[in-house]
Length: 256
Image (cartoon, rainbow, N blue to C red; front, side):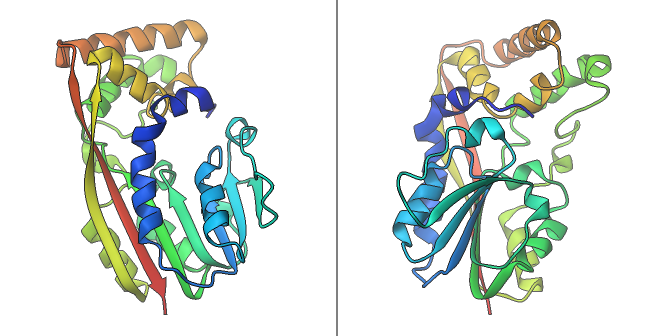
């Protein structure tokens, strides 16, 4: 997928609220090695490095476009690398991930894989969006079905909200307990966002949910896809104000 840092950061403040909550949930432990999975442009990775100055902090992301904007800010304990979350190697006292794991399948298996990289006494801290059953995503799937030939049948979540890999907060807690985790905290929270009508919803999704679709389409087909999606959004939200219930699941757990 080809990410656009400028578009992603158009809603920087709203997208940053959940990660601030996740950072606040972190216990103040003497971390030696920490990794931020799906670090994007690295602002929150830098926060980790500043907060835990004795830790060696790695920001890992698959997007060269995002990493080109990452800046260590002169912090000697911070570095960035391009890589795949599923190929993570090494062991860490803190595995942190903000709004990245939703792109990967089979979260019970994924958590088990990441848990094996957490050192005893270490922490896993994750935040994922849980908006896959929101109208904005359902209408995006409807549009993808209309463009089935151009997309070769690709749909991000399918037609039913259960196709998303994201679990409920209870399911994450149960999965972590099954892995032997302690000090589990798992919550779901709505972060209210007010958008200027259907065009505002389009602008919001253009930075994230639209990315895998537009990355698969030519410029011409992408323009037709966007127009068809916008028409559906306008039918859903004909007014000039949309209350967007930006729902996230956050969880932390410690390895005994």
